[in-house]
Amino acid sequence: MQIVLVEDNPLMQQLFAIFLRGHGFEVTVAATGAAALAAPVSLPALFMIDLRLPDCDGFELLQQLRAHPTLRQCPAIALSGLGEGDRRAAMAAGFDRFLTKPTDLDELLQTITELIGDNPSR
Image 1 (cartoon, rainbow, N blue to C red):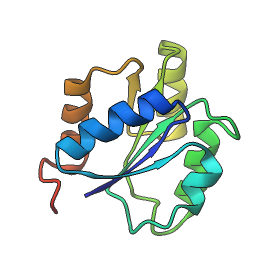
Image 2 (cartoon, rainbow, N blue to C red):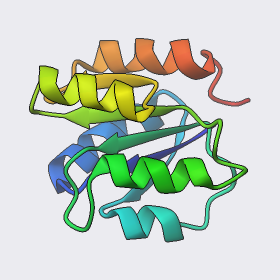
Image 3 (cartoon, rainbow, N blue to C red):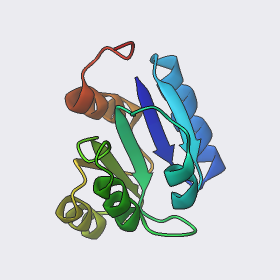
Image 4 (spheres, helix red, strand yellow):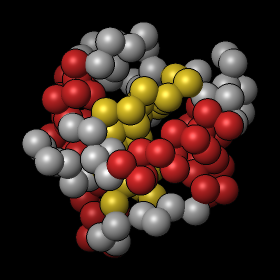
């Protein structure tokens, strides 16, 4: 299964990508909203989106993704280091889950499993 990670911090990109690939997921990394929208990927199983990106915020990006007919139903996890205010805003904006950064990797894996199942090869 493919996960699109939209994160501008190179260390977080590397941490998430290594962890997810180690659990059998294919990971496409984009550092900006524009790069995420332009990434040539097949239908991903999941988006992980940082709410603070250099060219847009994660809320705007999610709106653009949800406007695309084939991506409308793709689950999305919001990532933020800012806490409860962002959690409420993310859920109101249509994100399926919210995780704070730094992210507990066991919680991340559990959240992904809840959203898309536990078989990355599907």
